[in-house]
Structure formats: structure tokens, C-alpha cells
Image 1 (spheres, rainbow over the protein chains, first blue to last red):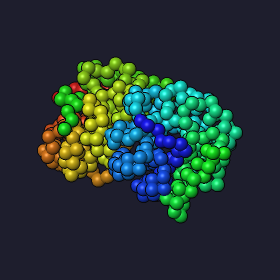
Image 2 (cartoon, rainbow over the protein chains, first blue to last red):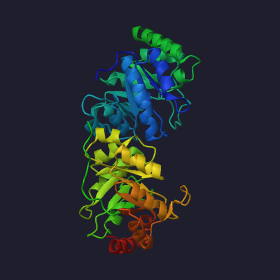
Image 3 (cartoon, each protein chain N blue to C red):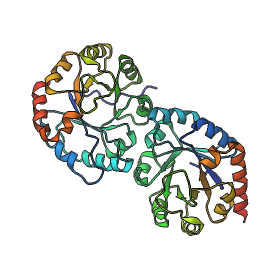
Image 4 (cartoon, rainbow over the protein chains, first blue to last red):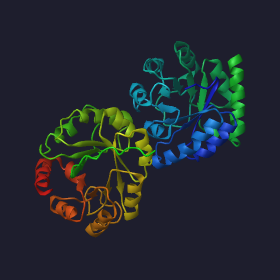
Length: 209
Length: 214
């Protein structure tokens, strides 16, 4: 599986909004990866949404991955999965998915990130970088210094997550992230397509600085 | 291309469903209880622990898979075909609103697929979807799930068993006394969470049911 060119903009679906709509607009704005994440949705809904989003990502030459639910990823032929620390371990996931699918792992420390790399992850999610309202986060934000150190230790792409907006996207990329993952910065924007375009522009500028 | 059916082997007549209170760690509760199964009676064991995360379920399923079970027994997992595959289980039992069984079977053809249904229409559509068996519930008043939809009763059970050609397991309020009634209605077998959760009496209950079932 070919990984998208950098900078990677991964747009994660928002539990409170229709996933297909977000995916459509984000892809039109240049998103390189869509991650379907909804911990409360039924298997039937996840399958239905996946079937609708997958061909759209193909049209835009983007990737479609599913959070946690490897069963759905296998059933619909998604490009891969994104796994949290409580989900199936990456080596088990690799056995089921084979060498060509993408496995991303959520990490919050350099050790977790290096372990994910050793276990065959294709990229790590790293964060949360800044304070965020998306999830109950018992731990404090890791900040851009930890981002810089961790990304320098890894040979796989690091996708920064947590509290990333238009205003700090450039800074995150210039601190070593290969990409960013966002939810509300796109889903709750007045115009999600334009928001994706603007964030990508900031990220490209961050790569040059 | 239509995928090959997973299994034409005879299904066990009894399915025990885990309590929903198992732990995902190194707790051997479930393993210990499985050693109380009558050795001459194959059983279907359905691991259904919604409160555990995927990693904990994998751990529990992997441990359970190492347990010696009566010959012909089948180890099933609720919904998660990926974890069932990773742990080497026999199949997946799907809730009513699951990813379509046909989709899952295309991705993992060697597994057994079952589904929970709560109406005649649900039963017919599950059969069309290609599942290997169904659970029909709630047949009787259940102590473990007292408010799970309108009671179907033996009459509805009989209708469903007549209408489909796949094996039907009666679920909901099953007791040793009414298990035979379900078989007489055309059910292939019975499934119970309540009797399995009653750990203190389980050995005796399982033996009684073993004697009564065909």
C-alpha cells in the first residue's frame, strides 16, 4: 500500500455528524486519509458508511482506514486500521491484514511510538500535542518538544494529533510531524472543504521552514 | 461467486453464553467453569463480554481456546470476526444490527456464522444473509434480560422453526424443564446466559440438560 505523500492530512470522522458528509468535504479539500471512528455505532452502520466512503477515497487517491474494527476493515476491503493501545496489538493485526495494508497505532510517548514501529506499524499517531476537547484525556498534552524528539527517533511517519487547528498546523509540521490528524478542525468548520485546503497550505509551508 | 459454507458439521444442541462479567486479564473463572461441562455432550460456548475492550477480549478468547472442551464443541465470539480469527475460535455470533454475514464470510470463509433474531422477518432475512444458524429470542421470560423485547413464546418459536431451514436455537428464559418443549417446537437446540451465569448450580444444570436433550 502506497502511503500518501507528505504532508498527510488525516481527517477522523466526528461521532456527532454524518461520516459520509465529512469525508466528502474533507476529500474535496485535499485530505489524504479518512479514518472512520465511531465507538458506539453498530457493525451494520460502520459497514454501510465504509462502503460509501471507500470509493470516494479511491476517486481522490486518498486512503481509507478504520479505527479499532479490523473485522469491518477486512469485510469491506479498507486500506487499513488505526489501533489504540487497548485495541488488538499490531503484530496480531498484521497477521490478519497481511503485509500490504496500513496499520497505524496511537501512541503518547516515545517508547510507545518506538514499540509500535518495532511491531510493524506503518505510521504512529502521536499526541495529544495540545489540549483537546475531543476525548477524555487524563494525561497532560505532550507538547511540541516531545513531538520533535519522538519524530527524530522514528523512521516511520508520525501523524500528530490533539488540539491541532489552522493556527498551529504549520508549527506541528516544522517540529517533525509527517502529518496531522484532525476531527473538529474540519468537521466543525463553517466550510470543511476550505478548512482542509487552508490547513494543507499551512502544513506545506511548515515543511519548508 | 458464492463463498463456501463454513461447516456442515452437526452443531451442538446447547449453547452457553458467558455472563458479561468475565475479566480480560489472567482470570481463569471461565476456564474453570468450562471444566464442569458434561464430557459426553458437545457444547457451543459464546463469549459475549461487551464491557471489555478488544485487547482484553483477545486475551480472554485466547485463554479459553486453550481449554479442552467436550469433543464436537464450538467456541464462538460475539460480533468480532477479527478477534475470533486471531484467537483461533470456530466462529462469530452476530447481533441483529451487524455487518452483513455474507461480507464477513467473504473475508473469512472458514468460520461459522450465527445471528440473533427477534422476529419471523428477522429469521428469514438472516437465513437469506447466509448465516449457519440463528438464535430466536426471547422465547420465555428471562431473569437475566427481563426487558428484552416482547415475549415470543413457544408458538412463535414453532412458526420460525417451520419457516427457516437453518438450525434455530431458542433463547430467553430457558430452563431444564422448558428445553424439551423448545425441541418439540422444532428448535435444533437451546441457548442460555442465565443458567451459565448461575455458577454455583451450573454443573448440576448442565448434567440435567444433557440427560434431557436429544
